[in-house]
Image 1 (cartoon, rainbow, N blue to C red):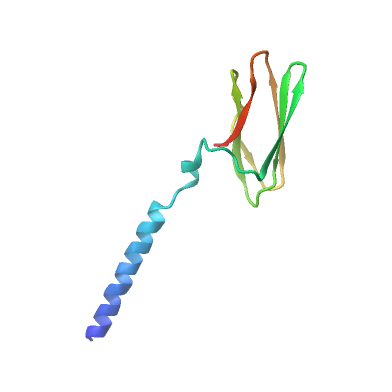
Image 2: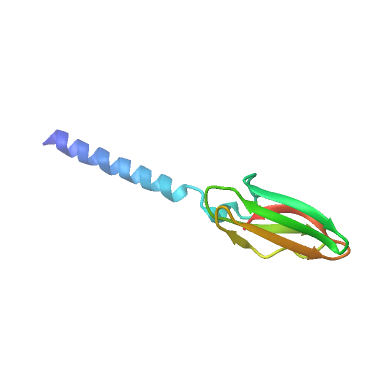
Length: 103
């Protein structure tokens, strides 16, 4: 009986520790503002009116990304499924491509 009680306590402690680890694991929202991973391809094209950014999600899953424009308005948050593309068009005199971040 004593061995059984010890095993039950050990299982309870293991479950509590595992649950605590799951709660402390970083979430997707914790990465907001970090630079998008390399699997989100970005190609910047200069245009007479500003620039375009062609985004390609070659990651294994859905990615939410935003184009940061230095000295101009940033893009909306684009939710891109794996294998999809999005083109961001910026028209302005002062803005320049900054980076692509998670949102």
